[in-house]
Every structure is written in C-alpha cells, then in structure tokens.
Amino acid sequence: MSISSYISRQFGNPTGLGGRLVTSVMNRQNRQLYEETLGLLSPFDADGILDIGCGNGYVLNMLASRCNSTLTGIDVSRSILHAASRRNRAHIESGRMKFFCQDVSAMTFEDSSFSKAYTINTVYFWKDLNSILKEIERVLKPGGLFINTLYTNETLSRFSHTKFGYNRYTVEQLMSAGEDEGLKTNAVAILNGAAYCISYVKTDL
Image (tube, rainbow, N blue to C red; front, side, top):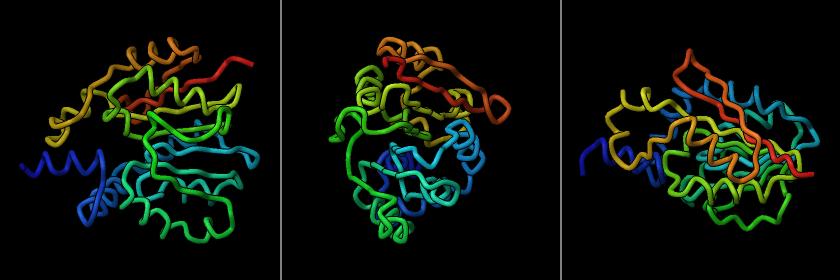
C-alpha cells in the first residue's frame, strides 16, 4: 500500500496511531473551514446538534466553548471516538455531549432528534447521496438545518492522497440530491472559492 493510499484510508476511517496523527494534522489545516461552518450553523443554547463524522471531537469541543447546546457526535471509527471522549471528558460527564459509533447511512436516533447537524470533509466517502441525505432529513426536526462543508474538486486534486477512495461530487449534484429528498438547499463559497458550505433545511412543518 502506498503512503497516499494509506493516508486516504485514514481520512475515511481513522484508526490507531495513524488515525490520531491524520486527524491532528487535519484539525490544524482545517481550522478556518471549521470556523466558517460554525458561523453558518449559528448555534443556540436550546439546539440539539449532531456532528456527522466527528473524528477526535475537535469541532464539538469548539462548539461546547461557545454555546450550551446538547451535542452529539458519530463516527465509524471506534478508535478515534476514544480520542474524542478523552478530549471532551468534562462535557461528557456534565451530560452535554455524547458519542456513538455509527454510520450516517443507518443512524439509530429517533425521527426529529436534532435541530441542527453538520459534517466537514466526509461527503467524499459517501456511497449514496440520496439515501444518506434522506437519513439526515429523518433525524432533523421540522425546520432543522444541516451544513455540509467540503473542498471543491479542484482543491482536492492538489492532494495526492485524494486519488484513492475519494468520491468527487459537484456542488450541483449535492444540492440536487438534497432537493430530491425535499430539502431546501443553498451553497456558499468559502476560503476564496476553495471550499463550499452547502446548507439543507427540512421544510416540512
């Protein structure tokens, strides 16, 4: 396995020492991406917020310092969730934050569980846009907001590891899939056009 292929696998499912190193580097590189996402999320204390693909819990830790929302993180990697739990131990003990090892395509949460949700740089690993967006729509409350933040395909092409295992979706594809599931969509270019935040609103009341 090449180094680039190994790094790609760690981004998709971080495990062990390699996963901890990859997520640590990712957190430093993507800090502005995180800030843009949270700005659009506009969290309120009464919100229940879901982080899809939460990794080591870095963004949830940022959120916890800015609002008193109830916070939940899911990730497919049990290994990286241990790191997330260590980082956020105080918030877990206070009852404000919970973590679950789950795949976004088949979440165990009840319908209308969250007022807001977000994911950052995970859409590249989704196999079926429509079914996953339908599942996210299911767990959102009426009027709920989901923010999907991703780099453009042009930006991704600058990194060698994205040649392995990365699905390349256009903004138009991502918006169209959301609209197919009854979500109202909008896209905002960030980082001078290097990335996008796509918002999806559950419109049925």
